[in-house]
Image 1 (cartoon, rainbow, N blue to C red):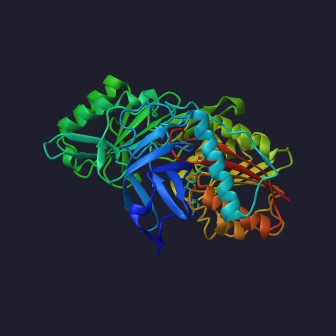
Image 2: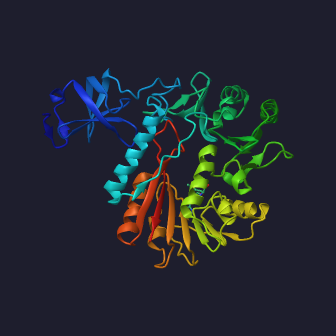
Image 3: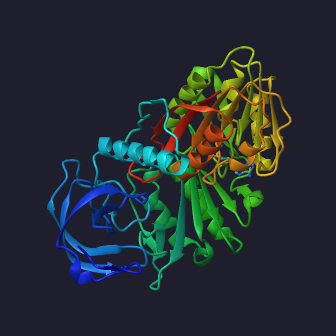
Length: 438
Ligand SMILES: C[S@@+](CC[C@H](N)C(=O)[O-])C[C@H]1O[C@@H](n2cnc3c(N)ncnc32)[C@H](O)[C@@H]1O
């Protein structure tokens, strides 16, 4: 057994071979030796590794160099040449079904550990296409020491940028722009002061937003115009905050759209607005939400953290009325526009900070889709006669579990169902849909 002293271990006491027993929340393989936790980034559960170099950290030991003596059956060759270096994906070395299993076990473990809850039944995972799914991306840019353009994501272990010219999780419409974007950046006079490029796909159009810290020259504008025409994309410039977003060409379309054919609904959004990152999964998520909320004609539904109305509008096709609450004023205005654009009169939107808002709307059902921080503040303020059914869409199992603990152990709800929604294949991110009922 390793000698563990005040969180430290004599490295020499560790065995050479270790069996990986699970993945942690960052997608890293974890082995145990007695009470000691050994992190083996890149290893998968069931694998036996032979470590050649360990390093101590404050809370655990890291296997810095190792070989895999016995590979897991789920191990596959990563599709992306940058996997391991790039900070974007963590699970490309695992078969897709194993990724889903990992996310499910992560959710179960979080609900038990932080929530002291378990659902009455588990929902089957809502899967995605494993690659080419992502319809929104934010790339960072800078100039290298030799005047070269670096455009990509942050590296896995550092904050430095990794230059990328391919990314197989991106929708092909954005993926094919990566190389041309390098060429465009190289030609711009403001290339040293252009820190970010954001891309967003609607069903038809692709928007590319250039965030620049110095004014664009006439030549810069004509380079961007040429790029827009050649690749048939909408180009936007952004000199400061989101309110400074401008179309490069005044007569071009200024927004994007996506549709829910099933609900005869079309949502319009600005290129920097939040939209669910995976179009196919979003369609299935909304369908699942409709079914789990079991919307009836008499229902008054409160949709908290509603964004541009992604859930509110389909809900309004079936419910008596829907009230969407959102903190970002531009998203509230967009949601209002979307309701009118779809001829929906039974939905209204309010702007409020949900960390302090006091719910003053009687409702029969509740939908919550908060950011990573979760929704504990608003949940604590729900009136005693709040919804009989709550559907909670979460992007962070730990805060979902904390909020579930409160709903179940303080408010008397039952967690009837929960399951994962794989919004971000190849990454460690775990999205969940959970149902609470009185
Ligand atoms: C995960 S997104 C969900 C958006 C929407 N439900 C959708 O499906 O597109 C979370 C939303 O919560 C909003 N938000 C974050 N913090 C908030 C707060 N304190 N009060 C109100 N809204 C907030 C964000 O602006 C964002 O639109």
